[in-house]
Image: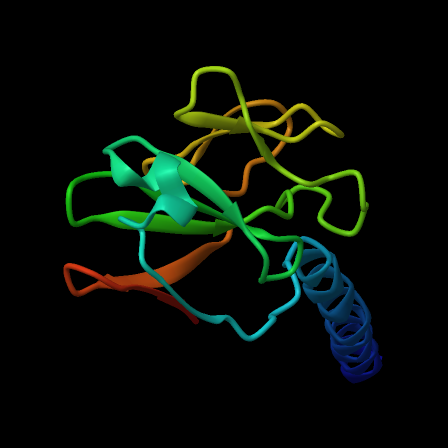
Length: 146
């Protein structure tokens, strides 16, 4: 009798793990912005990107999942983020924009706000940072990639 109980308990435990773990994993995947290949090279000191000519300047670029925001954090340091809101990226209205301060962003859909220096959220429902792309600057050309 005791053997049957243990066997049933193990079967129930295996069933719960098999059924519940994929659900948790599926939930996490819903908050991940789809991976899109990014390979961009620009001259941030050119007249085409006037706002990037100075520290704390920014520009919108085409690319990524919903576009890219490039931020000049220092003379030789750049940050690049996807404009898709990490909280509700699947909504077309969830395209992050630079707010009036010029150093923070906001999602018009969920009202989450993010800091451009590191992409971290500081207001709103998003617990996730903005999706960041790699950057490399050789003094004249800025490369943005993943």
